[in-house]
Length: 311
Image 1 (cartoon, helix red, strand yellow):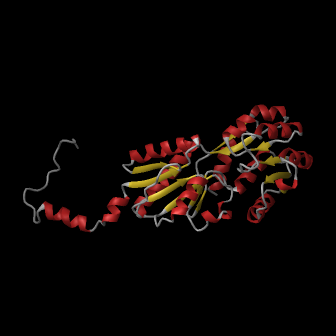
Image 2 (cartoon, helix red, strand yellow):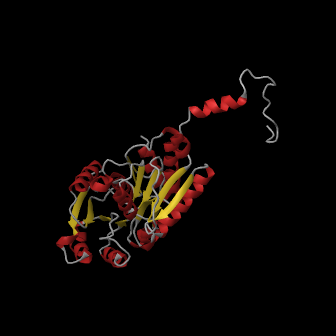
Image 3 (cartoon, helix red, strand yellow):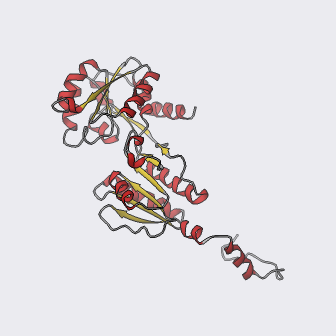
């Protein structure tokens, strides 16, 4: 139909059009009208990754005619209407919003292997930016069927995560060696002690263990021991890890946008605990060659993980 063409109502209507529109509006509550227009998104002020992620979410929402109030953790945040959906991205944003004790519906987005261990996230819908721990053990088994012993360095004891890791490892005929960082002088000491009994090091997203200051030393140490590292980001793999399951900002933005859209469609955010559904496996072929390891191509690894998720 031509956009300039009239719809063509009958010349005589049993009920005038004005009252019909008024009647329709009666069945749409003010809260529903307002809620479909606004979302609050809060992220950390000093994270380029989160800034890029928010920009892509905002672009997606604009295409859907859903407006968003964008804040970072250094700005004053206006939560004046409880119908607004709040999306907090990162730990700092989550804590900031939690301290305000809003009655708004919320989605907490953060990088954490096991969010249920953090009191802030319990009983609140959350989306992890990293894959579930069992997915990591699937990747390890797909990379090499002969590996048996997996070392994991943890900054502090975590009984829930340890139990989950042991259960997932057992399913894939792997054994987990949990290394408590506090038991050693530093992480290099921990690596030198544990790696001789390991086939692979699984790195979990923990800034206390893995950060910009020590990542080079960690990778050099593992390389000297001829032990591959399974990372948690694309940059980690570029730096020298063997492989990682990675979601781009575009992929995370797509999933978050879909969650927001679902909320405005049926007033539901989805399950309380969610993980990235859009991801790829990234590998470092140079590292594999240097370590004398033959691994499948990243496309087949990605496809296998995705197909297993739908079984």
